[in-house]
Length: 331
Image (cartoon, rainbow, N blue to C red; front, side):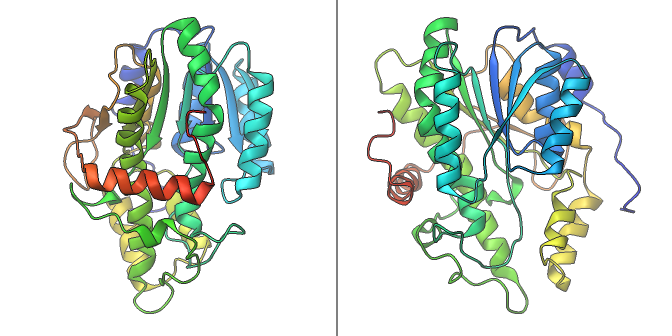
């Protein structure tokens, strides 16, 4: 697909037209300087929600905030670098202080990186796994009291995770080493560069497994009112592919993966349909998974069959608790 050709939006506007107002609700969105996260933030703002944008400090973050302000949204920015647990903890402290009374109705763990070189974060983990999953796990723990507060005040709250078609087939194996302090030692930079995509696949599988694991554990708590949901966008022209190339995705196989995705890509608005349903639609059930039907294809975001793997979910939970140093997730 030529770089200048933008896919037409086919489904999103009709979908959003059926959503109820979100006045009085507070929505947190990670990774919303562009792509599906920015689409979701704008939509929630248009529906009347208070939107808190969790982004790394940058000119892009400032521009995204101004865009929402110019559209009349009640929006604010809390600095949060998902490649740093310290930054996530600092963001969590700000949120817990500023939103203690009203709570958080929706936490959308949207941010993601793709196809990055094999390198460790300052915390020692694979950069893709930490940014895509581990920091979202920690952030969810940190704002859990705010989610419970909103649930008590307004009947429910939601955690929404954003997976990918790259998560692999149902039953795909989760490998503990990818969740441990092995950043920089997992491979991926040598020819033909397949391992970087294996690391990405593991992080996107983790997003879905976290959804199911959280659903089970939260529902086991008396009076739980926090739902756990997940979506995948299908092949989407979100701008993430360009960031991959800028970060070193220049090998032939990298270019093939990106070109194949863009050839089948739908618009960024249509790609945001799944998380929009999870965040904004009334009546959604905890544990639900939304996205286009079929692998490698776009289309409307549908309720998909569950892809449960209890053994992998338990492994995901145990390793994530250890990696983030969380002793009591709900405490």
